[in-house]
Image (cartoon, rainbow over all chains, first blue to last red; front, top):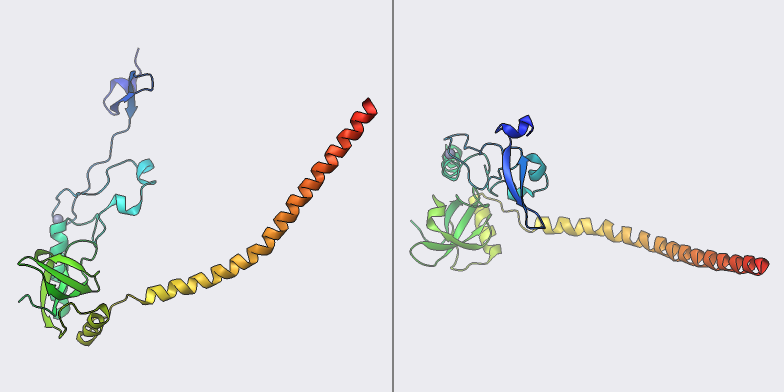
Length: 91
Length: 132
Ligand SMILES: [Zn+2]
């Protein structure tokens, strides 16, 4: 009989090939939801979508885009905010 | 609007939000920039053009660009960081000097170990003689 946790779909299924060329089913926890822009809500690109045990070993540049507001705002909104900041400085 | 010496702000990439001057115009879409950003080719779409201009020559050197930006009222941090790194290196060198006598100590330890080994071997030979 399979275990209860293996019957439910809370865990995601991953097929792994063993060194003896056998296909084995592994049960893993699901990935977190995608990151979204905080102003317009669009999906952010270049933001890693992994469990913390993987992201902890990643470098800072692998986790988010290397630009101001990277990982918080989308590229369109960063352009908008930078332009707005320039206008604010003038006045 | 786009001309040599025009003040711009970069909108894309890791230099986004930094000020720069146009040094050279390469074609309809691309220019060379320098200033707070790195000295590099740039698409015009990635620049927000401001109303100020500085008087610089075509392909002006980095020092000229920094001086021109200072007149407008924008400071560029570039060479100061390198000096700080040199300052940090000095104590490291002093530490290395401290390590050298330790190494000498290590060599003496090695000699001690070799001596101990010789002593052990001598003891073994003695015990073997006794047993025989
Ligand atoms: Zn957005």
